[in-house]
Length: 575
Image 1 (tube, rainbow, N blue to C red):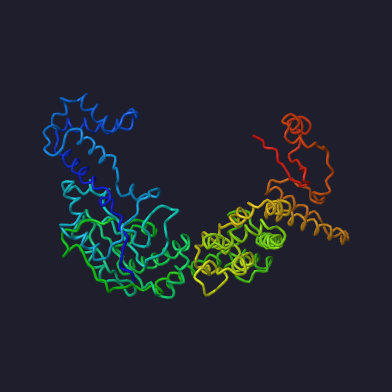
Image 2: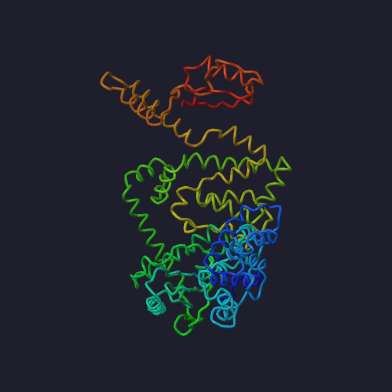
């Protein structure tokens, strides 16, 4: 394992932080009246006249309150104007760690070794101790300026467009809310013993003495680890990170029940920064053993087993619905049936229709690439880029499973290394349901794929002309049609003893439930137009107002056919 860390140290690239912390320390020694005046100085800064520089703002404030700021003239190492400037920088947290390395920052972190990291944390000559000294030992003052590491990701930036999601195999647990320093030391010593599968390699007391930070690492050459994290895709890495974290948390709490409500769950996010304090008492407050490793495979296997058992319990509680769905949709997997039922509850989704639409769009694009050179060039670029393939395949696999991977392959250029199973870029195609949480599988739509291919006008027209209505629309039409066909069959067979009204009652109940009023027998294409509009009438406000508000005031639904022949239904909105 690589024992280096990216060190997000704002004080290393902005040394003026030391003088700003010193300004805060001097503030603590001032008379109360002077402190109140400086508080007003900071508060009014945001409302200042922006045409003047910050130093001019400081000069004007001094000129206005010269007598009241007499204490500032007694400072030995700085002038009143410099002091005000530095104090303003402290109060507004200029160059604080969260800002210097924020998600819109261009600053890059420095790579340091584990030995250098420990030296920074524990040496009285290192820069973290100097930060604390500059603040007069005020932990609250220095905290926003402490350096940090992103322990779980090998990336030197937090800017989303440049951030890399290569997992380091390290995890951080943050334990808070302990009673006092003694309680924290006892907790540190117990956790250090570890459990069957997890053993920390570094742990230390938090700056305030009421918490413990615990670092774990797993073997990053483990085959299961490589399989889970090889894609380096943000969503996939986040999912697998949380699986190990949650499994480890449960094992930790099982052995140490008192920690159940003390573990900060925010550290389930691999992007989270871990702030590094100065540790004065290394003998009691710090533990380290580079040789210790935690298990990866056992932890994730146990956690996934628990997740699977929870899913089986949900299926059991909804067995009748699952069995019915499997029978009607020819689905052999209860898990898939349950998740599809949940997906339908989240948004309008019909697997059969969406699958047909997806495959036909791929068919059309593949066919057109041999006829349209512009489309061919676009497909060659779009479907030969790892990042693009990774994003599309992750979404589409979550919707269609293995079918998605096979269909996407049809659009990849034949000589591309994205089709070579031995090449590293083939990672885009290596997908598993383990890459997704249950909530994601319920909610992922195929829309990102269509948003991408609709950029090509000819593809956009094909989708609009052939799949203008949503899959839910089609489902409604199918249900209504089924009811009607059943009704007509029974009517033909009616010998006087059957009452076909029950089928009409079914239709009525369905319509009442959906709040819809649609024709049950005639197809849309057979509906005769009552009004024919000219090419410009659709954009004429007066013409459309006359139709909606005067001529057909009693209609709830209008059927409009566009100039290209497409028919759509428009519902009147009533307030």
